[in-house]
Length: 213
Figure 1: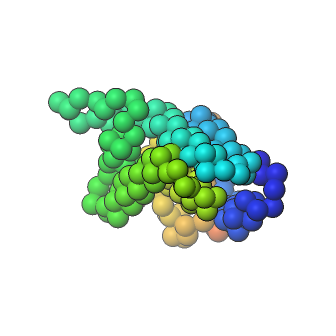
Figure 2: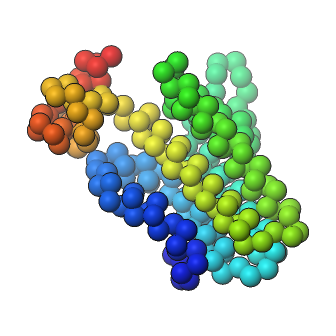
Figure 3: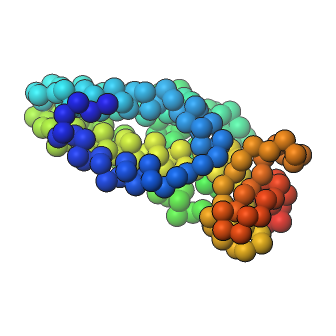
């Protein structure tokens, strides 16, 4: 994705940490499928940054990041996220859709900090991308900042969507460990199970959620 060493180094530590985290479960793939259009546009923005040499190239990077964020909300937004009686935002209204998505995927008082972070990061990143798009004196650092911020928004919302689309207990019901993963298992009514990598316990994913409430 990054032909030169320059931009690759900025991602090395974070990317390696993610690869080494060994996250497992079919739900990771499903969220990835959901956001494939957004991540494809993000890759295009990163490639444009790596190849860019002039301010005009950095402005184009900002535009690609805006397109990436719009692709995200178009993929993640659902009619049920709009409060009853309200009019749904237009498809390209990233700010309002990102707020509605955050309200849905991080609902409740316990998730208030997560919800606030999602909304703040989405709004700030959108404004930064808009600024870069119109910045006639943009430099490479500006483009890198916006590309990184866009990537962070996709990852943060992706994690929240993962939890929202496939809710599960946060800890093993037997040993209280957080080292758990979701696997497809036809033996359970829900079609999926929670496997604890600490004690080996296997629980029906749906029942585990009920028991942890």
